[in-house]
Length: 588
Ligand code: ADP
Image (cartoon, rainbow, N blue to C red; front, side, top):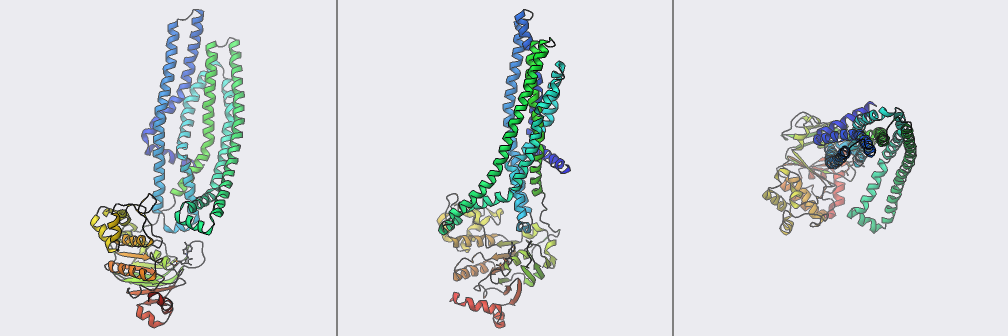
C-alpha cells in the first residue's frame, strides 16, 4: 500500500511538473464535468415545469424560451469546452509520454555495464516499456482526477439535487453500480499479473521477429531453410501470449455484461420510484423528468468513480514496474578528476567472474602498460582478452585485485573525465546508418562540422575513394536507401572513428578479425602508425601485428601466460611460439 501511494504521488508530481498547462486545463475540465449534470438537472426541472405551466396558462412563453436558451447555451458551451480540452489533454499526454520514454534512454546511458549481463535487467526494461505502451501514467492521472474531482464535485452536487426529492435514490444508485468497482479490482489485478508474467515471452517473440527483419539473419535463415522453423516458433509464442490476453478479455467482457445488466435493473427501479413519487403528488412532472436525468448522471458518475477506483491499483502496479527500472542504481563514479595518463596503467592480480558463472573469465592477471606504448593482447578465442580490456577501461568491476592509472584506482576516478580520455573500437562495432560525416564524428560530436578533420581521418584510414565517391553527407547503409559499403570499409570506418576521438588511450578489440590475415595486418600497421601519439591496446587472436607492437601479453584460459617482445617470447618457446608457428603460413 505504501509503495502504491509513493508511486501515485510520483506520477502526479511528474504530471504537474512536465505539463503544468495541461494539468490546469484538465482540472477545470473535470470540475465542469462534475458540475454540469447537477446544473442540467436543475435547468431541466424548471424547463419541464415551465412548459407544463405554459400549457395550463400559468407561465409565459418568454420564460420557457429563456430556460430553453439557457439549457441550449450550457449544452453548446460544454461541448465546445470538451472539444478544446480534449485536444489540449491529448497533446499533453503525448508530451508526458515522451518525457517518460526519455527517462528510459537516460537510464540506459547510466546503468553499470555489468547489469547488462543479467537477463533480469531485460525483463525489467520490458515491463517498463509495457507500462508506457499501455499509456499507464496518463491513465493514473486521469483516473485520479475522475475519482477526486468528478467524484467530489459531481456526485456531491447531483446527490444534493436528488436528495431533495427522495433519499432512496442514493443507495439505489450506489448499489446498482457497485459491481463495476469489484469487477475492475479483480479483473485489473488478473490482467496485470498476466502481462507481468509475459515479459520474457514477449522479449523472445521480439527477438524471433528481429531474426526475420534483419537482413543478415534473414539471409542465413533462408540459406539454412530454417525460416519456417523460426516462423513457427514465433507463431507459437504469439499464440500462447495472445491466448492468455484473450482469456482475460473474454472474462472482462462477461463481467462487464453482468455489471451492465445490474445497472439497468437499478435504472428501472429509479424510474419506478420517480413515477411513484409523481403519482403520489410528492414531485411535479418537471421534477420527474429531472430525476430520471439526474439519476442517470449520478449512476454514470458513481460508476466512473468506482470503475476508475477499481482500475487504479492495477495501473499503479504497472507504473511501479516502470519506476523499478528507472530506480535501478546508476554506475558508480569516483570523485577523483582524471586529467589523462602521465606515467602508466597497472593491473595488479586482477580476477573477474561474470554474474551467474562459476569459472573465472580472467584470473590473477598482473600487467603494466607504460604511457605511449602499443601492447597486443594475444590469445585464442575465449582466453579472456575482451574481458580483460573491459576491466582495464573500468567498464566491468574487478572481482579481485586492482587497476591503477598512475597509481589511482580506476574505481575512484570520476567516470566523465576518465571516459573523455579513452576510446574503444569493439569487435561488434556499430554500423551507423547515418551520413558518412556522423560515422566518423560520432566519437567526438563537438567536431561534427570540422570537415577538414573528418576528411583527413577518412583519408588516413584509406577511405579516400569512398569519400570522393559519395561525399561527407551521404547516408551509409541501405536502411534508408543510403550507400551500401563493403565489410572492409565499415571496419576501416570504425577504426577511423576510434582514432578521431582525441583520446589518450585507445583499445582495439579485433574489429578486423573477419578480414584476410594479410589485409588485417596492413590495416593494423596503419592503425599503429596513426596512433603513434597514443597508448594503444590491441586485441588479436592472430600473430600478424606482433612484430609491430612494443610488447605482447599472451592470454590462455583467463590467465596471462607470457609477456614480452616478439623476440623475447619466441626465445621462450612457449604458448606464443606455438601460436606463431601455427599461423606463420598465413603471412607468407
Ligand atoms: P576472448 O576475448 O579471448 O575471446 P572473452 O573475454 O570474450 O574471451 O571470454 C572469456 C571467458 O568468459 C569465456 O569463457 C567466455 O565464455 C566467458 N564470457 C564472456 N562473456 C561472458 C558473459 N557475458 N557471461 C558469461 N560468460 C562470459
